[in-house]
Image (cartoon, rainbow, N blue to C red; front, top):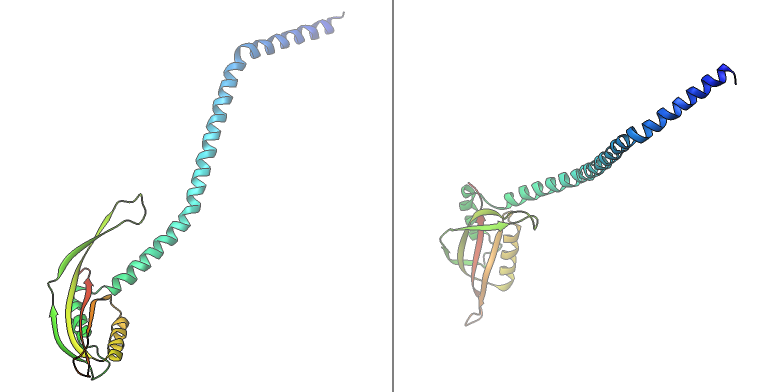
Amino acid sequence: MNQHQQILIVILVASLALVGYDYQYNHPARQTDVSAQEQANEKLRQDLSTALDAKAKIATLQAEIQKTQALSAELSQQLPKRSEAGALLEQITTTSTTKRMRVDSVTPATVAAKSLGIRLAPSDPVAQVKYEEMELSLEMHTFYRDLGAYLESLEKIPRLIDVDGLQMLAPSKPGPLGIKMRVKTYIYGG
């Protein structure tokens, strides 16, 4: 063997010894580091997936919020404010489509403070909405067709009005019906 071959063999043996030493003593630590990094990468992938799912839901939630706000605005326009209640009650008692309708009495009840629990989703807390209920008892004489027209005109009022306890009393002789009913409206805010 010549001297070059001997040097190559020594370098080869030394290289194999270093690789073996590295594999025996340093490789387990590197393998542990690689495994830890792979676990960290998997956790980051899961976090990214969760974040992307949440981002996709944001647009839907924003649309639902806007829809809820629009509905809330629409409903709050249907509920009169305290300052509008008098005009609304006058409108209820004077709304008539014919001269054949005679309002005999209007009796206001005490304004009742109420609250309503609202939950938007089963997991949400219950929110209390406070409002006042105003009720009028009306007694009138009119014909059946005119009563239908009166109720239809009440329905056209842009505020929330509830007709409750409608009673029709037959006349003792031909003529208009005796009508008793309660009309409620609801006040929200000032």
